[in-house]
Length: 345
Image (cartoon, rainbow, N blue to C red; front, side, top):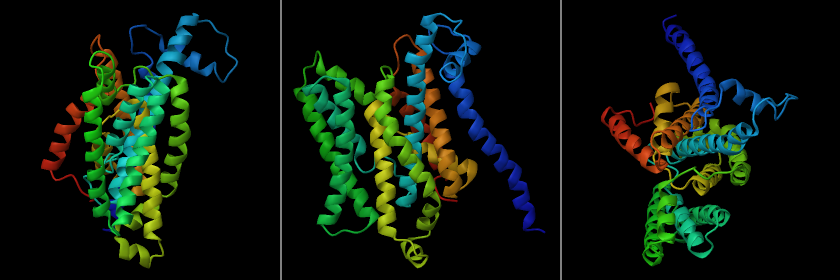
């Protein structure tokens, strides 16, 4: 009976956490439509969105429909997609590498994507080209890490992380070179603003390719999340249990990288989300990846949505997302580190 008591006590806590993780994104999703310089009534927001699926008579001005559907809806979905995607990719990376200090940018994704965006801004100056190049070079950076690992016949996760540091440094140097030669009056400010992270100009057309990549990859991670528990036991134990460690690790890294590269391609570089949010989720639901990954997805979506709401309402000139996430993430991570909450227990 003594062993059953703690489990019985944990059930209400877990049920409450589950309800919170489901309800909070829905509440924040609806509240975010009410923020902005153009006021919109809550009931009108619901009617405008519901009218896309149900036969509801339009009794609101056309400008209200445009504000809700063309301006705020893409931005709200983008914030939740980027936040949730970076967070679940971070949790997966930490599980695969068995290291609580890695993030989606460990393998050089951010540096590669930043370089790709700078190339597109210099050569094309067009948003879709910037998005496509950021995605492509983010993947290229990870491919170079794996190629380096294979070329030098290194078969360890530590070697892969070190390869990420090398590749990230290389792309950072190339990015600095591009900024040095960029026109300081036109191209350089655009590059710098993109690197700081923003969702200010996201449209529905921008979202489509990101969702096409992100949704299947997130579904894949959620379907395989129980195998992360096996990986966490160590490679030898996982092999004894019949898991093909190398193939599983490759699939997990590939799915996480696709998610991270897609997020960066639409938002620019938004740091700390994939590093800090998994630790909060672990505190809330525990280290079991079957619960940890859905919780991380929910918290990450809520976190970046709130950050974006603050960024577009706190001042007349919008604050870049990367600045806010760094201002919050750095001290919070230091607090977690000081309290010894960076671990697997």
